[in-house]
Image (cartoon, rainbow, N blue to C red; front, top):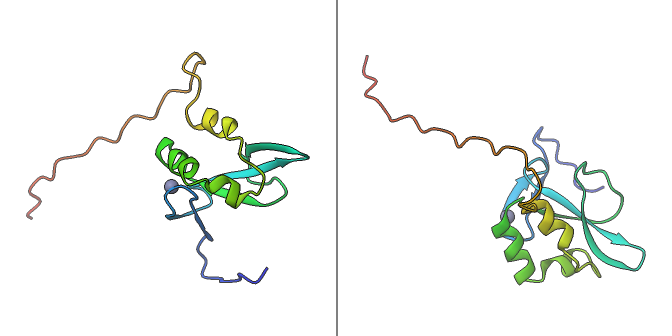
Length: 113
Ligand SMILES: [Zn+2]
């Protein structure tokens, strides 16, 4: 409760994969399932109780986090990342929501007035 920096900005969280910072809306919140389970859960609504870890929803950040064993460090005892892997790289058999079209880059036209 000591972090009261009322700059009007969203608090920055650090991705446990690439260690870069992002806002809560850019990162995925992960929590330990607890109760003797080693599973890591994806807290989609960012309101689950307990200690949270933050990760960019990207396969490369996930791979980095696994490689560095960042899950076990951020969420002691939680090493089962299957749910996270599934969330980030869904089963290809499951009908996935259409991926947003990649933004088309407009060529810079000469804009002299
Ligand atoms: Zn990251």
